Length: 242
Image (cartoon, rainbow, N blue to C red; front, top):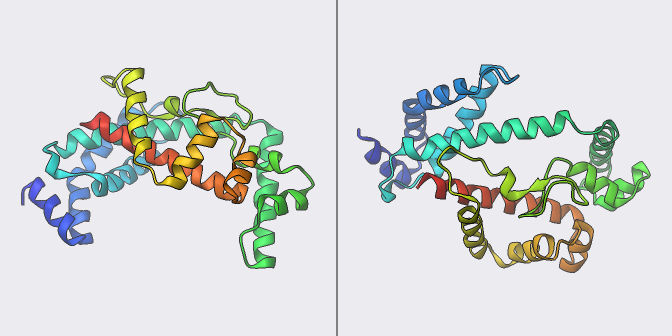
């Protein structure tokens, strides 16, 4: 069965057997790209696992009706996921010891509170339990994350600019074109997510202040922010693949 026909049938049926067949046919691409990143402090098996997961996700995101070959679409997608893996790994390795310890304490407290109360604890409950401020808890939990679309790393809650975290490729669009893609993607977000973007990235409010404005918990803002940023990453990757 031809590739495009295989994708069309999978799109219609969502048959996992068809998806697995597509993945198996293209595993050599994941292997090839993973090998290019060997020698940077990460074992090939780990890189291949990241590449394979990106391949699996890419199968569901690929649209065969656009006339783009799957290999053309998936190659920068896999490379981007591996680059993100290295970036995330680097951030975790270089987190200050006190931040690392606070992250561990906050996680442990959250698990204990969940076990006791049967529901996910708020940031204020976690902060109260470990004896620190809510801002400290959020900063520790979000360490290594993204704060703004365009401001430099090192903002009040750590991290870097969204555009710095989106994977590059050798023939990628220049900075202005990437920003245009991100702005176009923002227009497609649901109202609640656009509201968050306006507060966090437009007015550059803290997560605490954003939560107050939206009348939600700080944890909700944190999770929604990660969701929005992943959507924007996906939009840019798709654009670069076209």
